[in-house]
Length: 80
Length: 264
Image (cartoon, rainbow over all chains, first blue to last red; front, side):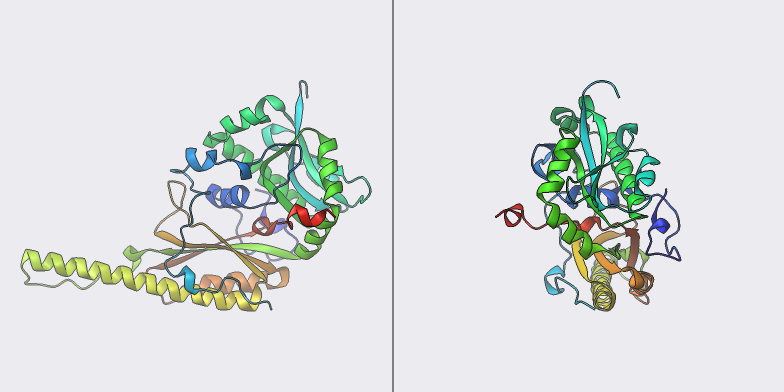
C-alpha cells in the first residue's frame, strides 16, 4: 500500500505498513464521504442494495447497533 | 479508452504542487488513469476523476456490480489508493464510493456550484487526520472463573452459567471503562468524532465482539499521542481489546452543509 506514512502529518509513521481491512474501508466509503448530487448516475447513498445483498458480509449500512452504554457517553469530545 | 465513458469522481481537493503527477502515477478504478478536473474560476479547487467505461459504471451495471464483493473490493481499494495519493500532497475531501457523473463537464459544474462549501470544508480539515478506534469485548480472553469441585452436575452447570454471565457483565463493564478513557483521550487530542456502526458479519475481524467503532478527527501534531493513549485505554482491563486504524484521510468527516444553504 502506498499508504499511511505518506500522509504529511505522521512523520514517524506510527502504523506499520499493512493492507487496510476491507471492512474498515467500507465503513468509510459506503457510509461516509461527501455525497454529490446533480447529474449523478448513481450514489450508494441512494440505494439500499448494499444493505440487502451484503448484509451477511459487511453490515456497513444497516440499522444502528449502538454499544450497550452508548446513550451514556457524550456525543462529541470536547475541543482542545 | 474506446467506447462511451462516465466520470468516476474520487475526491475534491485543493490543488498543490505535484498533485497532477501524484494522481497520474496511481491506477484508479477499473484500471483507469486518474486526472484532475479544475473548477472554472477557482483554479485551486480540483476533483480527481477517471473516465470509466459506462458499460461497467452506468446505473444498472453499478447496481449489479455492487452486489459482487470482489468487484466492490477492487473498486474500494482503488478508490482508497487515489485518496491516499492525494492526501500525501494536500487536504482531501473524499467522496462517497461510486460517485459517477456523465462527464468531466458535469464534475466541473458541481465544483463550481459548491465551490465555497468545498473550500470552507477543505480549510477546516487542513492538518487533521482520522483515526479509527474499535473496542472489542472478548470474554474468552479474560481469566476463567475458578472451577468448583464436588458439585452435582446440575449445580455445577448452574454455577458455570452464572460465572459465564458474570464474566460477560464484567467484560462489558471493563469495555465501558475503556470507552470512558478513550473519551478522556479524545477531549485532550481530538476535535470531532463520528460513530460508525459496530462491525458484524464475516468480514469483521475477531476475536471478540465489536462494541464501539468510532472515528476521531485529530490534529496532526496530536496524532501520535492520541494513538498511544487510545491503545493504552484497555490496560489492566481483562476481556477488552482495542484496535486503532489509520491514520486515514478524513473520510468520516467529509461532509458539506446541505445544498439549500449554498444557494440563495
